[in-house]
Each structure stands twice: as C-alpha cells, then as structure tokens.
Image (cartoon, rainbow, N blue to C red; front, side):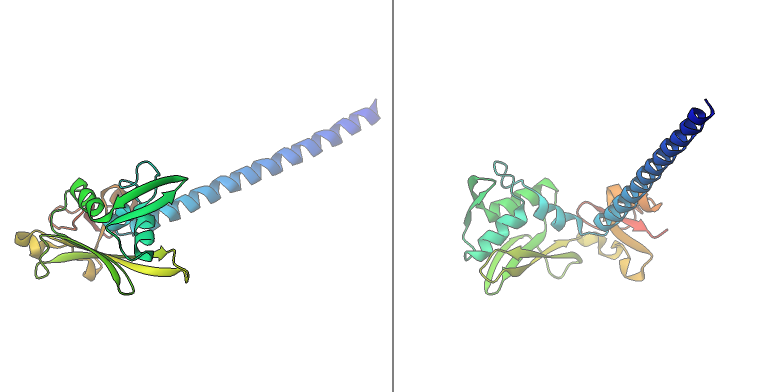
Length: 208
C-alpha cells in the first residue's frame, strides 16, 4: 500500500508540474499578445490618418476588395491610365483613379486638397480648390509598384486648413501637441484640444 501511495504522490507531482508549466506558458503568451497589440496601436496612432486610410480602403474596388494602394501601384506600372484594369482575388475590375480620390475625399468631408502619386515620370494628380499659400497639412506615404524592377512610388496628400483658422494650427513642431486620429488620443491619457486644428479625421492631442 505504501508503494502505491508513493507512486500516486509522484504522479500527482508530475501532473502538477506539467499543469503549472502550461499555465506559465499561456500567461506569458497572453502578456506578449497585449504588448504586441499595444505597440501596433501606437504605430497606427502615429500614422497619417487620411492618406493612410485612403490607401488601405477598398472603396474603389468593392467587388475584388483591392486596397487603393494596389490599384495605384498597378496604374503607375502601366503608364497611369485613366481607368486601371486589374485582377485581384480572381476578379477583374476597371478603376477610375480620379473618381476614386474624389469620392474618398468627399466621404471624409475634405474639400480643399491636392493628391499626387508619382513613379518616375508618371504621375496621378487630383486637385480640388487647393490653395498652396494657405496653411496646409502634408501627408506622405511610399507604396510598392509591381514593375519588372519592383519600384517604389511616392504618394502625397496636401489638405488646406480653413483660411480663417490658419493661426490655430496644432503646434506639433513645439512637441507639446501631436495630430492623432480622434480614437487614439485617449489611449495616451489625453483629450483633444479643440482650439487647435489638425484637419481630416485627426485632432490636436496634448502630449501627456
């Protein structure tokens, strides 16, 4: 009987050790996921909201689900046609680039802008009542172009602030504030300062 009791104790210790090990692994995995998620949110929060959202949006290719940056890349690789013929997810679509930019900017209620996507000598350019002499916000992103050499294109979006509010632009250069998407300002322990402007879907967020 004593031998069996000793064996049972050993088995119980082994099972306990295994369960403890599994618990530690699961716990560490959970912590790692939280850390990675937090880092990912911070990266998004530091992004340029309007242009980033436009390039990732599939507003222009609802059937195929292609992000706009893919449409632009294909268009720039084929000499900037007005309508980009592409195949994505096995679906063929023809995309009007200018119409796509116009529709997106209307959807985010921005009236004064200048959009350009350039690759070498080729360029898409779409403007609407943009005034270069009025205070503006500039966003820049680089995208891949599926050319033979696998190129990189530069995409720039300028958006005007209201002319009568030019002096109320968010003072980001002083490093006391930053322009962030509305959703993320609270994540850094702040709330938007409404006396300053950022433009687009961003707000002027004081550094905590």
